[in-house]
Length: 230
Image (cartoon, rainbow, N blue to C red):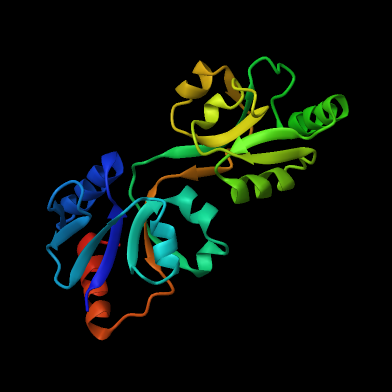
C-alpha cells in the first residue's frame, strides 16, 4: 500500500505545487500524455501521486480515498460540512491567493457595507416583489457570512459560468466570488463591499482525518512531512 497524495491535475496550480514540493526535495512529475492523470513521486519512498481537479480533492480527502491533498482553502470550506473534523491543514503554500468577496454594481453609490446591503435588499424586495439575487458558486460560505452580517432579504442563485457577468446579463443584482486583483470586477462595473472578505484563500496542503493508515503508509507520511518540514 502507498500513501496517496492528490494534487491539481493541470494549469498554474499544478505547476506551482510541483515547484513547491521540488524546492523541498520531493520531485513530482506527470507521466504519460496530458490526457492521462498519472504521476510519479521521487525523493520519498511509498507515495503515489493522484492528479485530480482542485474541486475534487476536498471530497476525496473527506472520503479517505487520498491521504494528503493540495487545494484551495475556499474549496475545502465550501464543499465540506464541518471541514475541520475531516481534514487538517498542514502547510499554506504561498500561492493561489484569492479573496472570496461580495460585490455590487458601482452605480449603487450608497451601498458600501453589509448594513447598506441589507437596506438595499429590503428596498429592492419592496419595489420589485422578489428578493435581491446574489450569484455565487459558494452557497454555504456566503449564506453564513450574510447571516452573520445581518443581511436578510436576498436569495442566492447558482453561477456555473462567469459570475461577474451575471449582473450585466440581468440574472443577478449582486455577486459573491473569488478575486485576486479585482480587475475583472472593475471591468464589469462592480465594486467590492468595504468589509473583511468572506475568506482569504490560498493553496494549502491538507491531511485527511478520515483515511486509515497502514504501518507502511504511516512511515511514508512521517518521512514526507519531515522532508517537507511541515
